[in-house]
Image (cartoon, rainbow, N blue to C red; front, top):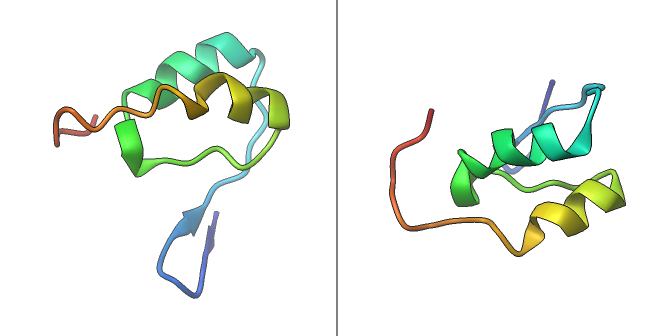
Amino acid sequence: MEWQDDSSLLVRFEAAGGLEMAWHLYQWGDAVEVLEPEGLHAMVEGHRRDDFSSMP
């Protein structure tokens, strides 16, 4: 984990599967942005939800 100058938090890790990771990220709505890998970024980009303010 790395705190960025803009107060965001960059988290890096390895995961076993992209689909499972996409479902997990969906819970965080628009509070998370996938930067890499490109395949996961493309999978979740259109599904960032902002319809409720609760986070896990």
